[in-house]
Length: 124
Image (tube, rainbow, N blue to C red; front, side):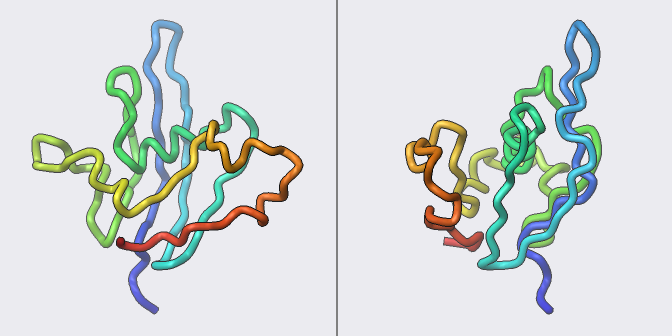
């Protein structure tokens, strides 16, 4: 079996506020191979968007910060890379299609999720 395209290991993203620490993502782990699809579903406020933003390195710091875990894309640890190291924080968007909460394709609540087209994770 080939190496996973994307590995997320024990991802933890916290927000540090005047009222205390918000543990928005606390221990998320999964692997995806090339051309596999992952649908992340859950209750409002369960950390779906922050998980995706963490993987894409788009969490605003401060107040948010990835405090633990590894995000490996093609074996490269994204959690330890920074703009100072020459990483364009938007480069991963070329590889990971996403649909936010306001995506028009999902605005009709009577449609089954399976009726919408899925986009496999792969390098374009």
